[in-house]
Image 1 (cartoon, rainbow, N blue to C red):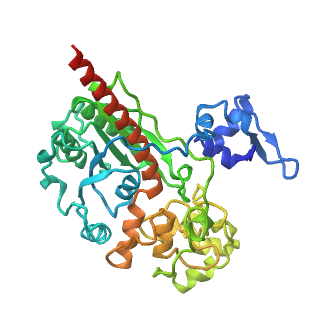
Image 2 (image 1 turned 30 degrees about the horizontal axis):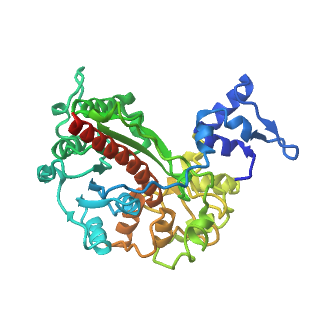
Image 3 (image 1 turned 90 degrees about the vertical axis):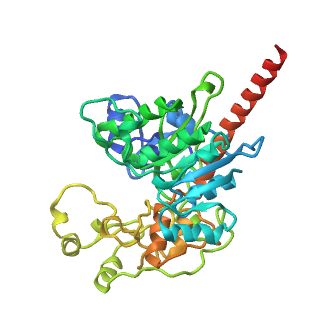
Length: 420
């Protein structure tokens, strides 16, 4: 990237802080901005941004080197959904031993696209993974975020029984996998003032795993044209702690946009195929016709704002997802399970309609030949819940590097043991 000057919004994305923090840093001298001579907007120099750790990571140019597996690594995935994480890990070289999913439509999707995968359609509480003990390299899953009952005590493994996290921990204990990957929403960091995550980390520690510092990864930094964030939690058996380390994947400099998702280019070899999709009611369509690409409800005439927003018009907050039309030259906002919800509107830049099913899939970086089963509503739900494929692939390569290092350590340890 030759760009050396960045806007306030771009800088906030790069350093993973909000705009108000940047304004405070500007006033205190921690990070001084420069003023655009045309519009007087605040801008920032690359040479100033790389003084920060996040800036150094962002401008790392070694992020395109993918690590090749030195042996065939196997995985089991829980809460597999429609296959975004599994497909990304497959692209990174992993062989899936088993996938478990409860939703019947997501299971149909997995079987349709990968008939050779071993897919269990059952409640995780009924899943017994003891036959796979010491036979897989990686356990993955995106368990739902649930609160625990504390009663003023430090919770351990048995105390979390009844939650889906307990089932994830139970299967980890059963398989004794050397490495695990858990993904969740960013909100888990602050859920119940951080107590929920703290409990999870305590349980994983109790089971003999070192957990690397959880990180919120922004999908736009990993070849995904969407502002989606996922909390990634990676851990390994404590026995390797003093011998190997883990680094999260380095971000790409290039940010892909909606145009990259839906048009022929670097991400896809053709324009997005036509598909089914939801439509707006007539009055909503008339209102959204007035919103320009990149705009939202504040771009409407004041009387229409009041009509559309109703009581929300008089409340605080930006509510920037309402009556939102995405522009071609920006990443999509985070996709939800339904494309036409009032609070999280994602309108096509040219046509006044929600994104179609195949457009939804492109924004999540699913290939065009990945078919989603079930009704249109079910298809949107599966895509909206998925981990973006390209993000999963990058995480997969970073875990491959970790497993390679563990493999080297075990070989060295064995050789040294033979030499005694």
